Length: 402
Image (cartoon, rainbow, N blue to C red):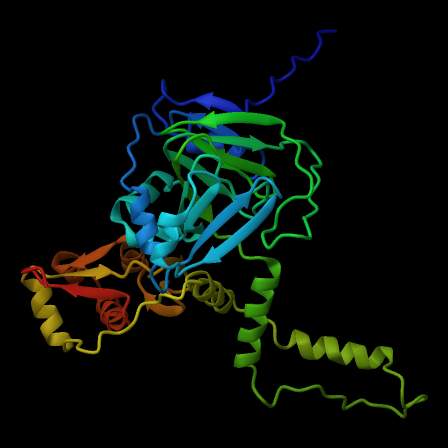
């Protein structure tokens, strides 16, 4: 009897330099073998990568209102941690030591066009699943401690070198330290230890303990996925059900019989509770889809698209588009689309627009709407564009640079 040939274990580290794919394999192979299954270090995923940002760019943003940023300092002598959130006073940065601190700024893809373009390299994933690009600058020795994330993340080394240690074991300890503000692991035992240089990419599935320490002053770009918890989904879903429920829909008991014990909640009462709750269910797939599309395109940031107080009338906007103007999508506008029983839906920041599928797909993918795209839309598509402009999801840019 011929013994079965054993399949060799999948590697934790590969080099993408020799192949045509940044992942070192086809996207389908990556999703099949690694996505939400095991970590992967991809050397030379972005060979020759040069960071479009410098540390001072981050520091300037961290001083602004409306920016999600944290400054994390580590005292090696006491193993203590200090966390400061934006806006961070300008005089803090010159007083920082030469080592053991990290500055993290989220949503950098909203502030920087080059970082926004980086997301095109991840188009094998649904764009609505991508949350943001967080950028961290770490002085030598800088770290945020050993921790886990509850979402997938791609860590691109953009400048300098960072040592990454991960625990890829089957049952890593996940208890947190009770003495620090950060959610740091009480125990951490690395199974893999790597130093990443510019262009290297580390993929980590949810729940993998990891610890990154700067070998020298360095920049790391983190492409994080949006992974709402079951509690978030349920909370928003129930809120939507409750808001749409008619007031006449109530707990009823027309077949009530005399109570044997007036203080007992009996089985029949619980059956009626289940019936009342079942009456609230979204049995219409389009209603369920509209709820999720609205939910997933709303953003957690304090920055939201806002209507222009000096908005032009529609007839003027259409004239501008016909003469070279464009409608640029607001950086914080999240869009997605879905096929419906009839036509399609375009979702934008919680809004729902009924459109032909062709229009919805084109608008969801477009960073800007020019005259040609606008004229190629159906009437419903053009109506949706104007409604999105009026609510701040687009900004009019005239041909003269206004």
